[in-house]
Length: 138
Image (cartoon, rainbow, N blue to C red; front, side, top):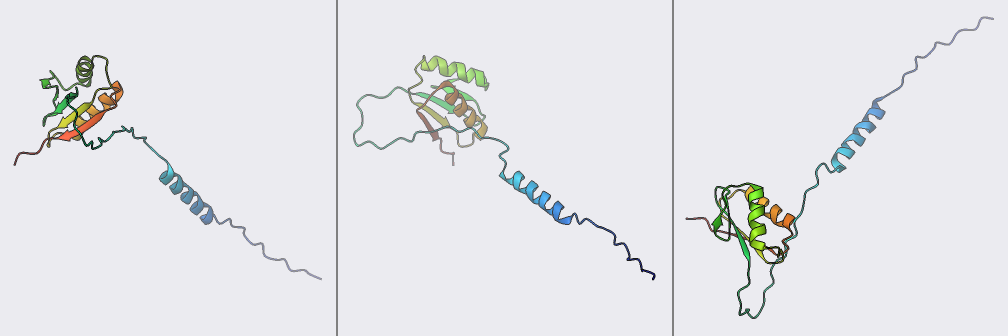
C-alpha cells in the first residue's frame, strides 16, 4: 500500500494587523503627549466700587512704544534689554512689589514686548497687574 504524501503548506505570518496596531499606538501617543508647557500669569481683574477713594493710589506704569522701547513712569529706558527693565522696576518699587503695576502698550507694539514686560513683572513678584492699550491714531 502506497500512501500519498500530503503537500506541505507554506506557513505565512500576516504582519499587517500588527503594523496597523503599532501605527495606531504611535498616533495615539503623538496626539496625547504635551510637547511644551506654557507658563501662565494670573491677572486679577479690577472690581467696580461704588465710591471713589479720596487719595490717589501709588502705582508704577510701564509704557511700551511702537518700536518695543520701554518707559517706566514716563522715564524712557536706555535700551530694550530685559535686565534694564528689571533694574528700573526694582528702583521704582523700592522693595514694595505689592503696589499696582500698569502696562500700557501702543496699539502697534509687538506682543513680544508686552509679554516681556509681563514676564519681568511676574518674576519680580508684582501681583496687582493691569493692562491698558493706547488707541491707534486715525
